[in-house]
Length: 368
Image (cartoon, rainbow, N blue to C red; front, side):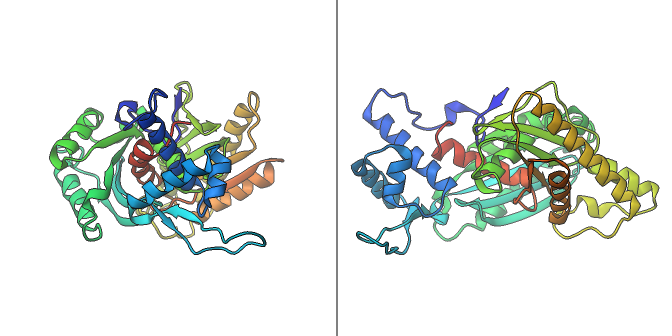
């Protein structure tokens, strides 16, 4: 089943959706079109915006002026060309909007706040809660309030919303406290009621793929396979910016849980596997065996997809250290002719950063 690019979870929440029936709706759609373009491309001139969107020069000028007044778009330094007057590049204003992203896991809950261009302004990781409060609700609300307190002065009105990345994989849900899945189902309303801020919900792997598309390595890509290495190995197929999730293909048991089991058998401490940031120590052969299995599973998924569709690019994402994704991508690229394998660029918590992209996509972008 397809998910929208950037994965807005509830189309009703997309304000002023264009119906093509009146000038207000069309203008709203055109504004979204320009903002979508600037999300994907930094520093475009009015002429470039017009060429890429098909909008007239007058329409582009009106839209840009309106977005500037709202503080969503800013002008760069004039660039002198060979002919004609200097061009002025336009970009999103980092302070134009903010959002919070929450990723719920079986060991940690990650909370981030980002600005309009995806820069992290607040980050923390909460430990696994006990079974009396499977979602760590009270502490979670307190943490989100801490993130909101980190907003620049007088920027509270620019909070676009809260994104919530929730796992659907039954194997991973079974790893958490009893009743965790049931509590996740009601959490969005609980957060909205407690904070008075709209919450946007998405499957956690789809959210990670959407975040990589909006802010990371896939910004310029149309078609690719997205792999996420978490407790288990997941993948999504992205075609023409649409994120597809087939219910027939569940996660593979070759993620960090498999590595943890291998390391435990070899006598290593494994807490470092679940920490965000930093590098892993040298685990020797225990890691090498897992690494090879992980690469083989990626290649198998790539081969299966390639039987039906021409897939030439894969993105490898994880909260594991950057060098792990880089090495996996390098090996896949070396062993698969014609395949470009790219490590993801979202650090700390790709799922939480992807969740934080949901309010932006719902309020500022067009459906692809």
